[in-house]
Amino acid sequence: MAQKQNLSEIAKDPRLHDLRQTQLQVAMGIESGSDALRGTLAGNTDDLSPSTLIDISLNDPFVPAKLEKALSPRSQRVSGPQGNVEPLTLIRDPAAWTVADWAGKDDWIYQLTDQDLAELDAAVTEAQARGIRQTGNAYHVQEVVKSQADFPLPTLGPKLVAIRENVRIGRGFQLIRGVPVDRLTRQQVMIVYWGMGLYWGNTNMQNAKQHIIGHIKDLRQTVNSTTRVYTTNLAQPFHNDISDIVGLLCLQKAPKGGLSSWSSSLQVVNEMLLRGRQDLVQELAGPNWYLDRKGEIPEGEKPYFRLPILNYHKGYLSINYSATYYELAQRHPDVPRMTPKQKEAVRWFNALAKSDELRMDGDLQPGDIQLLQNHGILHMRTAFEDALEEDQRRHLLRLWISPPNDRELPEVYRPLWGSITPGQRGGIWGFEDVPPTIPLEAE
Ligand SMILES: [Fe+2]
Image 1 (spheres, rainbow, N blue to C red):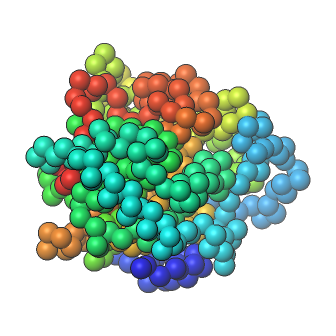
Image 2: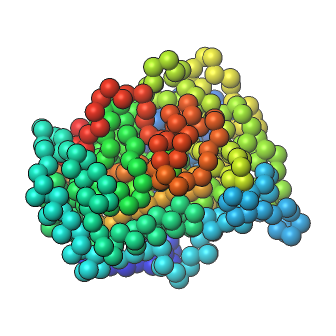
C-alpha cells in the first residue's frame, strides 16, 4: 500500500523542484536561457520543435509582478460559484484555489479500504467468469462490462460517484490510492479500471486507433512537431485534455522525473484580475485563438481549429488551454499571426499556472489514480528518464470521462469535442469506423 503523503510534504520538498528543473533540461538537451528560448520570447516562432515550444512555456523565467498594493477583492466584481459566474469577474468557486488552501489537508486523497478491495476483487472475478474475448493486444472488457450492474460495487460504488462529484463540481481534483496493481494481471487491471470508470461517466476515444483506455508511455519514437507528447519522455506543459474529466492510473513510475502538477485555471484568471490585467482576461475570452490538431484531422476539418481560452456560457466559465498548441498552429499560413497582446496573455497564463502559489505537485505511485476536472484545472508533467528494464518503465493508464450530468458547453467546443452533449462529448472523434479498443500494452 502506498503511504499517504500530505500536500505540504509534497509541495515543499525542495528536492522535487531541483529534480524538475534538472530533468527538464537533461531530457531535452537544453539549458534555460538558450538562444532558442530568447528568440522565441522575442516573438520569433520560426523554431517550432517540441523542445523549443516546451521551453517557451515551462522555462520562461517571467514572473508577473504582484502589485505594490494588490487590488482588493472588495474593489472588484465577484461572482460564483460555477453556474452563477459573470464574465470578467473574480470567481468564487471550490475549484478556484491556491496551494495555501490545501496546506495540511489531505481530504483530497482517498485510500481504498480492505472492504473496497474485496468488492473490486469480487466484481473482477464475476466479470472474468462471464468470459472476456482477447484478440491479440485487444482485451474486449467493454463487451462484457457494459454498465454499473455488470460491475457491482455495493459500498465502493456510491463512494466513487461522490468522488466524481467532488471532481466535477467541487475542488476539481482527487487522488485515489491503493489499486493493487502489483498483484493483479494486466487483464484484471483493465477490468478494475474500466469498471470503476463506469461510476464516473461514459468513456471517450483517445486517438485515431480508438483506444478507450490509453497508455501513457514513452514509445521511443522519433519526435517531431506533431508527435503527441504523452507518447514521449518530454515534459508536458500546462494544458487540459479533451474531456470533462481525465483519470490517470499509475502502473509504474519513472526512476527520475515524470512528476505531475496541477493548477486551477479559474484562479489563474482571478490572479490576472487581482493584478489589474482585465485587458488580458478580455483577450483570453476573445475569438481568435487557433490550435494545431497535430495531424489528427477529422474528415472535412482543417489541420487547426479555433477555440477561445475563456468561454463564459450560461453562468459557467469553461477554460480550454493548451500551451504550445497556439504557437504550433502558426505553422499554417492561413492561421492569423498571434498578436503581441495574445503572446503576452499566454505568457502570463503559463507563468501564473506554474507559480509556487498556484501549482500543486504530486508524485504518482503505482496504484494511484489521479482524477482531474478539465474545465477549471490544468495539468502538466515534468520530463523523465526511463528505466532500461521493460517492466520498470513509466506507465500510466488514462481514461477520458464524460459524465452525463455535466455542465453545458458552447457551440465553439464542437469542432474539437465532436459533440457538446454531456455524456457524449470529447475525445478524438472522426474515426468511428474503427472499433473501440482496450489495448493491453501500448501500441
Ligand atoms: Fe493531459
